[in-house]
Each structure stands twice: as structure tokens, then as C-alpha cells.
Amino acid sequence: MKSLGDRMKENYEIRARHYLTRRTPVIVRVDGRAFHTLTKRFAKPFDQKFIDAMTRAASDLFMEMQGCKMAYIQSDEASFVLTDYDRHATESWFDYRQSKIESLSASLMSVFFNEHMCDMGAGLLTAAFDSRAFNIPRMKSPTTSCGGRKTGIETQ
Ligand SMILES: Nc1nc2c(ncn2[C@@H]2O[C@H](COP(=O)(O)OP(=O)(O)OP(=O)(O)O)[C@@H](O)[C@H]2O)c(=O)[nH]1
Ligand SMILES: [Mg+2]
Image (cartoon, rainbow, N blue to C red; front, side, top):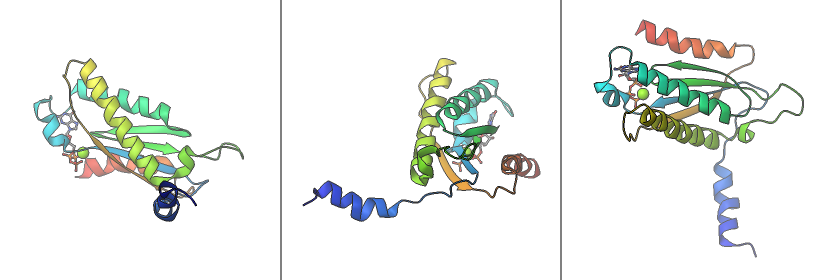
């Protein structure tokens, strides 16, 4: 008989998994949680240390993501475009398991951002990012999704 742990995983945990569609671009967007509070004491409207920490953290995360083709940073959020179709045998990041992509990108971005802010003398922060991952059709340029973030901000 299988162990209780295996039965719980097979009968319940695995059934709740959701996979994004292969061979279709994936957008991952991380967004700082309640950064209106975190950035209260920062220079307005642009704080160079904050922008540097965002850029460095997003670069670190870029390096962690298999198949990541570009990143776009806007305010307290960063969008990443992932693909898995360079070659026939190209793999996708964590098989495009949505919860894995979202939880790991959020936690890594949080760790990297806090690390870089600390290096720049901001002290020990507990800034956190949330994350969402979704497909966009190949016929739409993935850059449209990133560019749309900029347009959204400008028209607010
Ligand atoms: N002072 C300062 N604030 C910034 C800078 N970049 C982003 N912000 C602030 O970061 C906040 C980001 O906005 P949102 O992501 O919509 O709001 P949030 O408070 O993070 O809320 P949630 O994302 O919903 O948790 C805004 O209040 C911006 O003003 C900056 O360079 N300087
Ligand atoms: Mg935010």
C-alpha cells in the first residue's frame, strides 16, 4: 500500500495543478505588495536606489527563468516573457506549472530585491512581491503585453 504522503499527493495535491499551454509565450509579472507604503520615504517621483534595486533584482530573476527572453520594469512591477519553442526539444520552465512559476518568481524577486536594497544601505527590509503567470497568443507580440503596462500607467 502506498504511504499516506504519496496518497495525499496523488489523490489531492497533483489534481489541483494547472499547467500553462506549451509552445505559447508566457508572461510572468511580479508586483511589489503595498509599495505605496514602502516608497513613502523614497525620492519622488523616481528614486534611483529603488530603480537600481528593481533592475538588479529583475536581472537576477531573469537569469533564474528558463527560456526568459525579455524583461520590462515599470514602477514596482517587472514583466518577463518566457518561450519554450526555440528548438523542438526546448523545455519549459517547470513544465509551465502555474503555481510553481508564480510562487517561485514571487519569492525569488522578494529575496533579490531585499538583498539589493540592503547592499545599497536601506537596511533590512521585508518587501514582498506577488506574481501572476499567463499565456498570450503567439500572434500577439509578447512585447505588446509589456508595453501595455507602460501605456496603462501613462493614461491613469
Ligand atoms: N517615491 C517613489 N515611489 C515609487 C517609485 N516607483 C514606484 N513607486 C510607488 O510604488 C507604488 C506602486 O503602486 P501599486 O503597485 O499600484 O500599489 P501598491 O501600494 O504596491 O499596492 P499593491 O501592488 O496592490 O499591493 C506607487 O504608490 C508608486 O508611487 C519611485 O521611484 N519613487
Ligand atoms: Mg504594487
